[in-house]
Image (cartoon, rainbow, N blue to C red; front, side, top):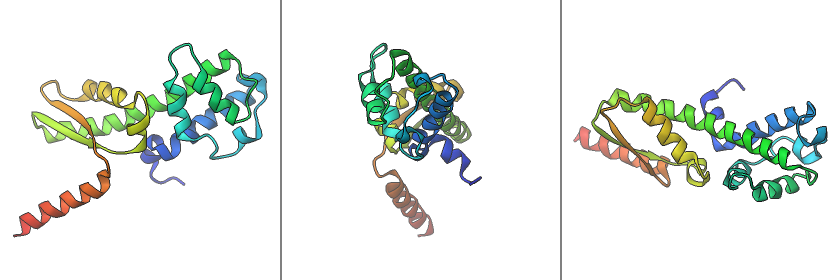
Length: 175
């Protein structure tokens, strides 16, 4: 509580819960599902981040993945308007996370001041969310100095490889 706030705003571990909290708030206010939620929806930790990715995978104006998710949550009575609003909530949570992580990456790229930078990115949200990569590229491009080019590259097992790279560089510098 009160720690690792940046991580809680961008991490896949928390994105589903952030979306759930917004959905619950709008449901209790009578703005979603006719004000009628479900026990599963109201239970903490039951709206998984994979649901955010699935819901955003629907083509605009279609809600098949969204309906599958809402059915799993016991919300079979959801209307198309409910589905559109749930999708919008998921998009807001995803965009916010992408913008926050992109601001940090852009600041580091600008600080490095290299002409070309490749950034290794790891994580389930980056790997599986249908738009996260594009959202990041768009926002980083907005923040990075115009004379710097960058690429984002999927780096599976990024933390393990990153630690190995740091150890190798440290070893080389000490010898």
